[in-house]
Amino acid sequence: MTLSLTWIGHATLAVNIGGYTVVVDPFFADNPTTEATSETVAADYILVSHGHNDHIADAVALSKHTGAPVITTLEVAGWLEKQGVQTHGLNLGGQLSLPFGKVKLTVAVHGSQMPDGSYGGCAVGFLLTSPKGRKIYLACDTALFGDMRLIGEEGVDLAVLPIGDYFTMGPDDALRAVKLLEPKQVMPYHYGTWDLIEQDPDAWAQRVSAETSAQAHVLKPGDTLQLVE
Ligand code: NI
Ligand code: MN
Image (cartoon, rainbow, N blue to C red; front, side):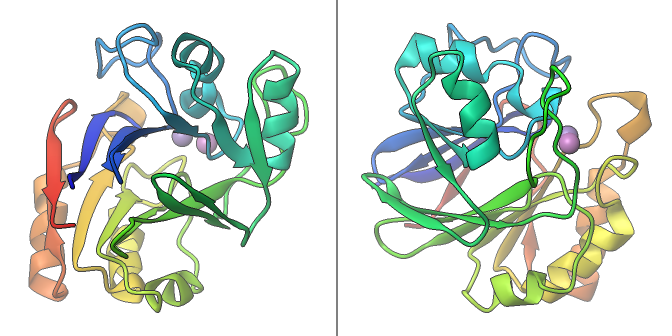
């Protein structure tokens, strides 16, 4: 069965896992890195990491267009439910088994306010486990934190880490994150969308190769990374 991850652009991903498509943090209309829209992207499930616009902007439209339920935090789920979206509202550390595999909400050190200014609870990351036990860690928006080591203890096959700086970890802290997580493979994202978070991903990948045993993959928006299931 296919296990792959497409970087739609910014923090938006489409993960093919267990025969299903899981779209993470749908942000299309105002996303300068993609032409994708909530009408053109396929989704069986949607994950939303927190309430900031660059992660949730098109979640309602994508869910309504595809019928995909949203897996997120209790607070974000409540906000989406009011707009008629079907959700699973978990909390930090909670794991849910679904037909595509398992999804666990991991700690992220970041804010979360809904686009209308209402309370958004805690920001989270996600640990996905495929039917054959492959683990993909999506850090989502976060600072570096030492307990990434605990996530790494689960055996991470692919870590997807922000390197943009300003809103999240920058390249230096993301490199330290690789050392804590010890993933087999790593992919940077949440950079290059706007001038504020412009970075050199190839230079970062070279540092990863020089200082860790992880294999770094630099994708362009729209590119797909194939993984061994
Ligand atoms: Ni954010
Ligand atoms: Mn963000």
